[in-house]
Image 1: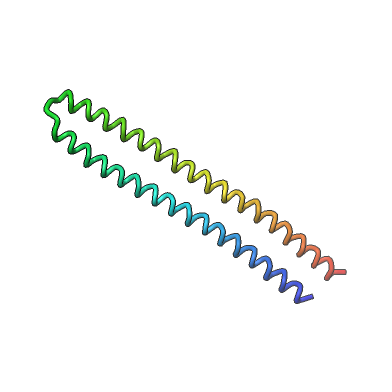
Image 2: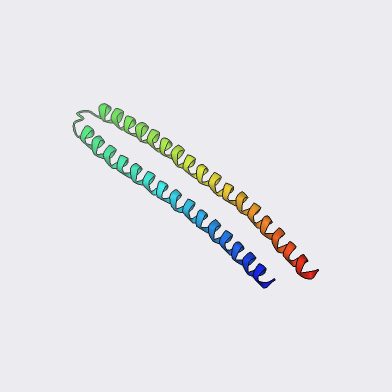
Length: 125
């Protein structure tokens, strides 16, 4: 009977380790994606700033400068909204993955509880 308890304990420990490992992998992948997206955005902002500085340096009147500034702000806003949508989609995917892991782990935990209960009843009989 002790062997059965040891096996059940080992199984539950393996299940918990597997669950934590999958969660950690999901979190690491999500963070890597977010860091890459942030790096892309920073790079894009630097490039835009350089291009805009070059354009503004060749401007001859205030009206043209204001028009160019307006275009720069509009373009930057569009990039930010696009980035926001992409990051939101990434986080939604991560949330769905974690929810799936939780559902899977609840089922595993229920199965383990049933096994422990059955073993306890068997021992009591």
